[in-house]
Image 1 (cartoon, rainbow, N blue to C red):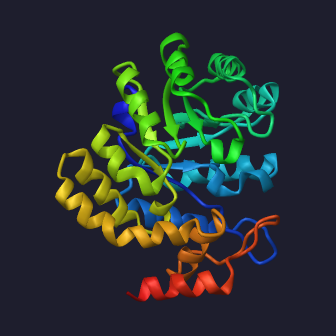
Image 2 (cartoon, rainbow, N blue to C red):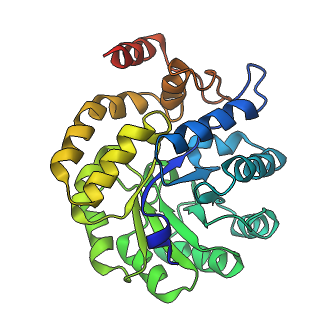
Image 3 (tube, rainbow, N blue to C red):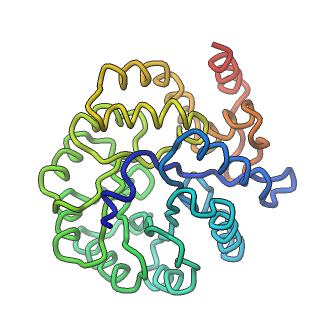
Length: 293
């Protein structure tokens, strides 16, 4: 089955809950996994940026992946995030991480190094050759400092075996439309920008890997399903109340916003690892007021 069929709809980039001493709160992670699956998301993504992966050591990452597989227990597909700006190190992780039960690997473009388009192509070509599972490209220039142009993504899709899709978070509907126009038939294109999902569904995307679906799994995944079925009246009605939430989620930092929402919903405790800090009282109080509405 192609990724385009297997991962259609809403994937959720899971947060990593922590205790007050900054150790991983696996019980809360289990609560979150149950919460989003009960809410109707189609799959989960572990070790994404929203999971604060830059602050996790390798053993913690392995523990989270193993726990996630165990907790999900086949109820939905699991995608594992493995990326970085040291190509050899990423290949090493692809060879060492437990990926037997994974549907795919989500690999963010190299950050900080700002490689050329050819550098991005060669990086992903090496990862695809080493990975036991299909690679989902992840273009997120707001974090990496370099946009992966649609032409580069399409070149990878057409020329490199084992590249199965892309999470496009370039904050550009025109770039997403170019990907949709030029992609191979079985190439998955999902959004990484929650606030652009509705117009991108109209353009023809296959779904989203979402931050908002951590805290609004039912409303958000219903909106995406409505859009995928062409029922944009329903999709708009479901999306409109979420517009304010999208702004609050990203007002200061991700995942500080989503962790504040999840704390107010009683799913996790509000702890982050430095350099990230919890939301300011000003924004946190806006979240409380929003949820009361």
